[in-house]
Image 1 (tube, rainbow, N blue to C red):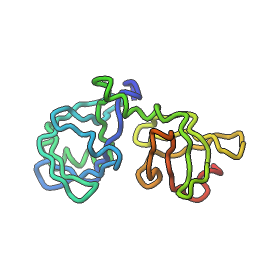
Image 2: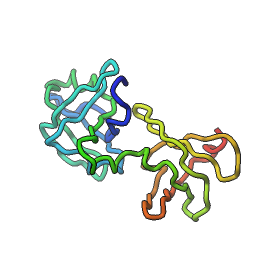
Image 3: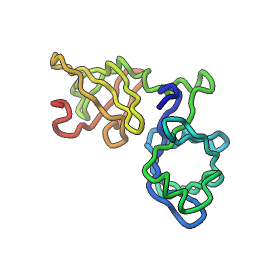
Length: 175
């Protein structure tokens, strides 16, 4: 990705082609569903460069999916080409949008559901399609472990207490 990594946030993944007119089925990353503004372009990266697409139609399908028609994608052949790709939104339009910058969570405490402290967020890595937090464990273990930014893992965030609550897959702190 040649564009600044902090300029885009992943908001959805293209699951599959739908129909013959170029529609796609997308699954949203839960914390970003409301971030898609149909009046602004979304981006898909081709050869490391962000390519803008305007949303022509948007039909919700359940709580985390939608059928979307993007301008310029006019056939099932073209929609199949973007299956599996991540859809990004441009979120550095104004200062209010900077609140969505995940690097602002550096320093937050990471706890499990019971309130046990796991560690603190020491860094943010904006890997395309797989953003991760670097977490320094509370048990004084010197190695940082990576925590994927995913709806199944991050259950809640509390900006007043600077805490996120997570449900960790077994063994993730050992990696």
